[in-house]
Image 1 (cartoon, rainbow, N blue to C red):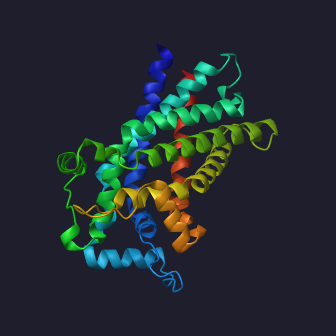
Image 2: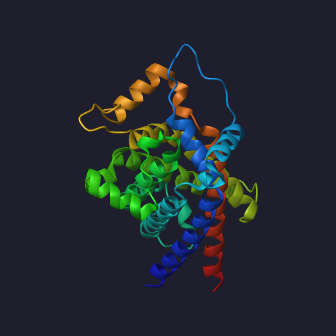
Length: 302
């Protein structure tokens, strides 16, 4: 019972940390989606390089500063449903699979850490996908032609309209991609953090403090970004594609989207938006794990 309460309290603090960081980094998320969503229409004539600052400036001029915070309500809901579920479940699995000795549960075999991450990520996605679809659509809405805009007022309105107009199943459009991404991100992020922290402490590079936590968490954020970016690109395009009544969908599925993207734009198109991804994932992972470690320390001191 005490362990369950501890994990619940950790989840609450992680929600607060995730929500704060979500609002702060909403502009980066919007710019990241724009970069990923736009295919190169002519392979032999690549578009000119446009920096994120230039894109952001154009958005502010044409749509106002609030456009950089499009879909923030959906992003916060997604963090609550997805991030805290996967983090909490990962901690539960680590505790359950450890031998409950005096040693830290981080010393689980690497494969058990990865499996725990895969399970936690998939479960978190099951409840977070509707908010994820709403977030992608709300962030991209302002860049659509006026006649194609959905004009969602909030995440609740987005989910409600999708359910009525496209059916409940539309809330899980691209869910296979989202599950795959969540499993990869959670497994790579959490397992890398635990493994890196363990290596630093075993080799005596640093003591168990903020320096170790920041180093291990940034490494975890980098690995997760490299592993997940290709799936993010495909997921964004599949979720955001416009389906006309009686028309043919731009992509028949994730594999079709991936093949068309690579064929027309090259393999590196799968890493569009990587800079904003690592710019968000790195600091977010640091905040997440440093918060988690401080809560763990608090419970040990009680």
